[in-house]
Length: 223
Image 1 (cartoon, rainbow, N blue to C red):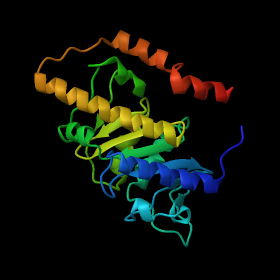
Image 2: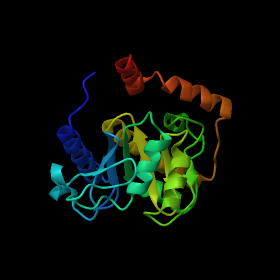
Image 3: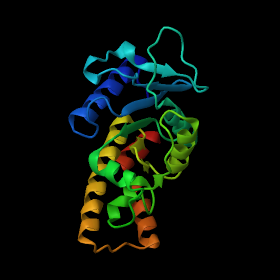
């Protein structure tokens, strides 16, 4: 299968960031978007409105964290994006948002447990919440890499959420799903009547999701 060109990927990163912002997943200039490219990644620049971002503004960061001369500065969160790609060679895109309910749970240091079978869409029995660390640090990068090693999404304590996928569209869809689940879980907590599915059921659902919908489509393309 022919790989997308660098120019088309740069445009897709911008389109994903704009959709993330306009849909309310990440207000203002918060959040960031990246995709795997060459030996590194393409990522949104720091401090620039998505509406004002051009394809040439998207920053290439090499696998060793170096940035070629003449580019804008990458997102201040580039470390955890790169760490996630190292941890998940099977994933090609990441979306980080400060979506409302996911951020509320993250600030309460609450993972999203098996309250609903759709939690398994992230690849397991829960959507974990990784420990807090200052943004832009190697410590936070290590936490995120650990959180995504066996999941396609995690919450980041006192921060927000991050979702990954085989493509930018898939990562954005995952971020949307996490926010929906976060809102539902928050409302169940308000009712104070929580009933969790057991681990065996969640692992069965996670296996089924591997051949369901978009995942089935992606698996067909890889053959």
